Image (cartoon, rainbow, N blue to C red):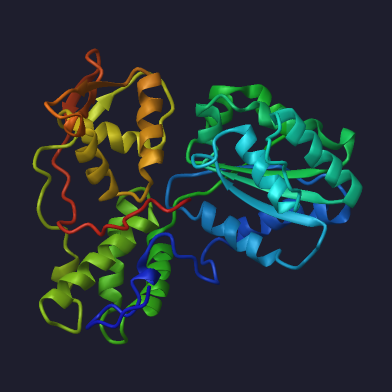
Length: 378
């Protein structure tokens, strides 16, 4: 999506989902990932990785950078990327693997174990190996599909058939759900730390050069956005959103240059955010955002979706999964409210009655959050 404006030349380059050819300030992580998967190309068992870290710290960006670098390196190694909220069952993952191996499944359909057996048969016959990236790993655990790890771990009878990289915002995901899954794959933990203010400044400057017109921004502008991003768990998406909003404000005013006043966070939420007192369960950033939204008062499903999307880019299906997960953890309660017309029937979503909340100091937020705001896929 390229556009020519007074300030913005490419909105795509300012989107959190946009990936640049060069990844800044993650050299050690990129090296570690490449070293972990290297044995797979040598016919040996790779180090399976469990990558964790807060949203916006570059997890997915680094992995996709590595996968892109593997293109054409070996015809026998099949790099496969799967988002486990979008494909949250073993069958869904197997189907993606089968397609990558050019294995046609019969129209009548096959049982899950049959598909798995066909995959192993093809890999054995052709000497193929799979580097499987499972992003948003939480989706599999939400559907209780962690048996996938046992299947992958036993594949090949000791031969290195699969290399697996799991990604999650929750560093405790494996321990808190099923420690056996971690043992089955012999996952090696890898954590993505927060960016420093200087590193965040470099990342946002890189995007500004790609997405904003020359002379429309200054180091002062970038540093202000970087400070805002670092204050929000070092989330690159937050910094990009601030930069985008400032550029839009400058354009709306008919200016060709962003002023520092454009970056300042304006306005307040209608009511003070709340801190939800939850039991000792592990929550993703997306789940915490939903609790924060609903904590200010019950929301219709439509209103919740809209407010969520102002902060993070997710599909409605993903948001519904987060809500269902919070219901399963007994943190949310939903009620269907019937109207005169079935078309007007809606769901009201609220905190469970037993949960306590307390107001926090009012958090200032950008008045105009971009519609593509996203906590970057890591």
